[in-house]
Length: 230
Image (tube, rainbow, N blue to C red; front, top):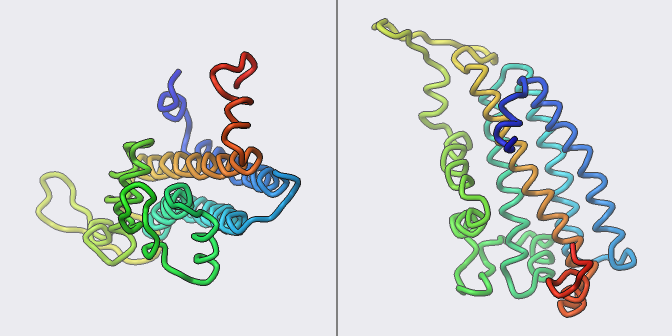
């Protein structure tokens, strides 16, 4: 069974519960990178803590809004969860990730830093392009969810409805969804799960890097010439 097949078998509530289980995993992952390398504290730890905490808060708000049938409020949180991964992934692209983390703490824009290989500034588009090399579907998520950040046509089409063959438009007010299907909600939850998986992967990558700061030592432990490599 593929990952997608596994998700298809879930109900909306089961998917939401899966997402909430991911939220709990954040605590374990956070303790892992904080205790790595004899619990030494680095600037990137502070950025990682911020990303982890923000992710848990976003999941809490997102699940609440989906259950409350407030898709317009929930949808931008998907974009913010993607932003979480993009910002933390930036640390893997620069010469000095701790300098980037210190800049983050001081309120410096990530756009002022440059990618190690291309020397291009770390714009959102560049970060999306780089992360999409590992997860191609991210580009579409970025483009579609960006429309929910600012007032746009996405809000318009979530406010009106039209039945096939009916020439009249139906307008609705209030906070509850009227023209969002169960599938729309379900798809949004699955995307949120996938984005959270990426962030957890990145945080775990920092744990591994912190535990084995010496690349030679890492290769001896995990390299293909090691019969015990994992």
